[in-house]
Length: 256
Image 1 (tube, rainbow, N blue to C red):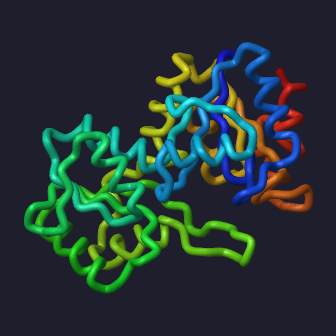
Image 2: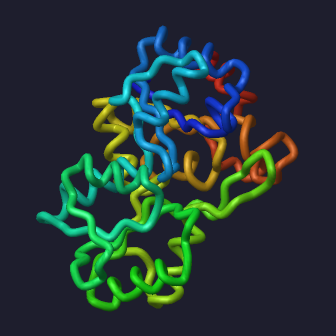
Image 3: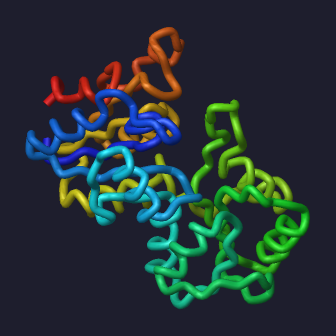
């Protein structure tokens, strides 16, 4: 194997706490000569935010080794469309990643070439109205990701997919493109960082719908860890979706 695509929340850490064995698993992968890219579907954190969190947990990772759905979306929009004007629906981190990509932002529907929708904790009727009017006037509809919900210490909270679904229902159209896991823009961005072929990589994560599905679509060997969304009693394990199933990131070293 030449490289590994590693999920963050539920695989390396859980909220502000490192998952036991994760640092050792990462070190073992590096010692085996694999290049690494850490990929999160979060659209509420910049790559720098993720680097800082990892550093606070004792894990040193370069910004260039990190992708978020916000950074992937910003790169995709900036390289696919010619001088687009974007209306961002989401967090300050999403707007920051778009600005870093040199993209002009607007709040005006009539100026909008591309509507980019991510997780927005302040989402309201006025926001939905502005985005709907942008779509009505012909804007391209791009979603950072479609995660339905996010597990937290106090229970489930809505994910980006809940906000995306509101626009899709109101406008009676699905997104023209979704950029985060398991979709192609994230696959391409990850393999580009690794400078590797899909067949020579692993994807390691806790979410069958995003991490494991990314690997299945791209022909990447998949490793499902049981430190996040799935445990040994989950019926999904009986479906044989993942190439390998391990207790935690610490156990991945035995596969290489």
